[in-house]
Length: 211
Image (cartoon, rainbow, N blue to C red):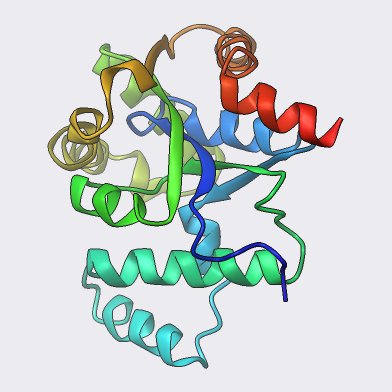
């Protein structure tokens, strides 16, 4: 078992942005740096053991094409995070969680707040919806997901973000949110994120503990 108390709030940074803003790319890069652990919501569900009771609950919804309830989503997420901590893949006493794809709405943010302390929200902003659509279309074709390249699917994904996910910005205190222009080259977006992180008291505190 991990020595870390699972009831202790885990330090985290949240990357928030519309589909095509590059949040997944930035999360993966940050997660490759020691003392940062990238936690993509999709990866959590893909690695879920469907033989367990909680896994069976997830399958019961997904197999019917229904949205998984917010409470179950966060429960699934916490179970997987605890498992990663128990196996020492993720070390919550010295690692920062990089959240990507979760929370997806304000209710999930409220539930997640019981388990993590979000010290910074990186809002990757891209007001130019045509640019987002271009990126999503390019990525879908690259990954051979032809259906996802349709204007209807792309418009729906962006509309869902605007209606359900973007309001999360109202949940967190304004001083914890930094807005970054996502249309910049990815390396500049990454640079702005890192420059912000290294100024945070929590980063300096944790860095001194493990130096």
